[in-house]
View 1 (cartoon, rainbow, N blue to C red):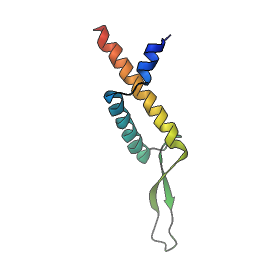
View 2: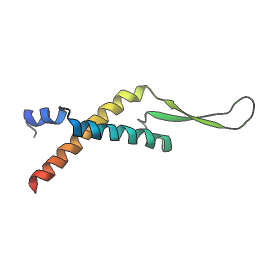
View 3: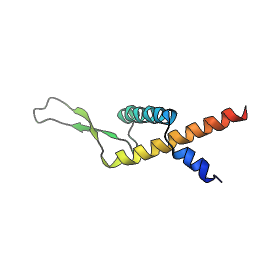
View 4: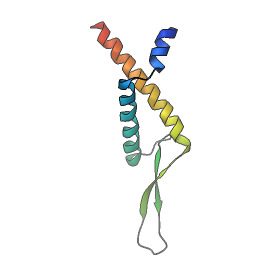
Length: 91
């Protein structure tokens, strides 16, 4: 079980966690343009215009998923950095 100091260190932002957070958010946006998954920030919508020019696919922002994705990516970045620190301290 984790003690209070480890939890504080896990939640405390530093430059490595912020960098990892930005990388995860950018990866999330690019992946959501290619694949559709339940909590993606962007969703591709296909529209058939009235003039009959063909299908148009445009990305739209899913506002309900933004906060959830931010929280998930922040916890993932903290977990990744914590695991890397534990791995480095064992060597």
